Image 1 (cartoon, rainbow, N blue to C red):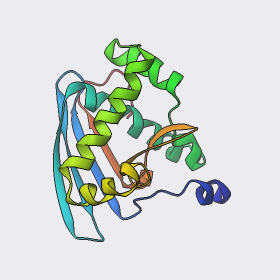
Image 2 (image 1 turned 30 degrees about the horizontal axis):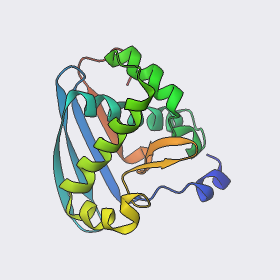
Image 3 (image 1 turned 90 degrees about the horizontal axis):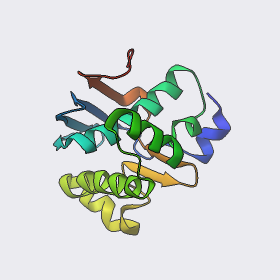
Image 4 (image 1 turned 30 degrees about the vertical axis):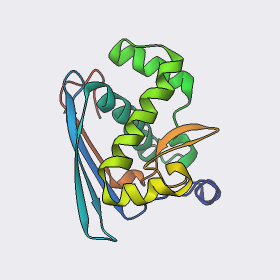
Length: 157
């Protein structure tokens, strides 16, 4: 991994594990475990929220497995658009921003830590889903991401 890239784009939640499983057509469930605060939070995701989160998690896991720099985990809007169209049949680029924002709000509203994080900078600087000029990514180190998709359209995830 490129150390310089990690310094420029550090993962904001280095002591958090995210476990997510479900079906693309039905949605899923998630569990967030924070080793620092010794807390766990549980989530239910709608089908669209689950698809958005799985796209972000897959990008992070793919970059990590291929030993790419952390910047490779970001998903740019055009890539998001093509993935949503492939998986979910949606391709409206304006909707992508809203869908990611809604997913960020799920984490911000439903976690004890998320509520405190969301209060700072409107949630932008400490969100579990971060946004930069490169796109969006899950701000948890990929080795701490655990994704199981049961009706996957792509093998090997």
